[in-house]
Length: 219
Image (tube, rainbow, N blue to C red):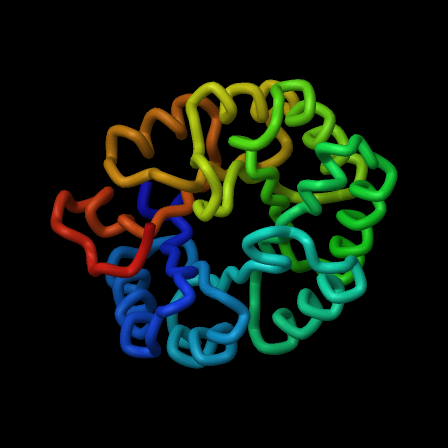
């Protein structure tokens, strides 16, 4: 399970000391990546340069309401600073308004900015209907995204087994599905994996894999 976890700290009041702890925990427990805000990408890339831990960062986070131009610039800048993976938030208003062409164009533009860098698309599934989730999954496939992802962890709810199953059923076996938001126990993480998740985003990662109390750095 360790290699499926993006060890996450996205709080506005995160300190450099907490980020360092996050990196050290990720290295110690062989988590797949650290997932941090763009301001910490360069720092984490340097701290983890001799490890196998990837650097994941978030774009348009947490509301998804930035313009596409800003998201594209933010993506290119993050990659230049050392990001290995990009987790972007869709414009949720466009999804709710069924502006599907605009949503697809934005994801396509950000994937183009990523080049070979892996792109995950955050849906905020707690705000969407099942049909909207299905449509968004289809759009992500057409636009070339590598993963679909449930949540930011900063809205009204996080990942659910039902939504993970729906996303996996829609995208099939050749696309990643990331469960994030509210995953704090090994049992919950395993339930998400059993439902089809290929990556877990969590701040309680240490507790999930060891049963020990995690550092205080997440939701």
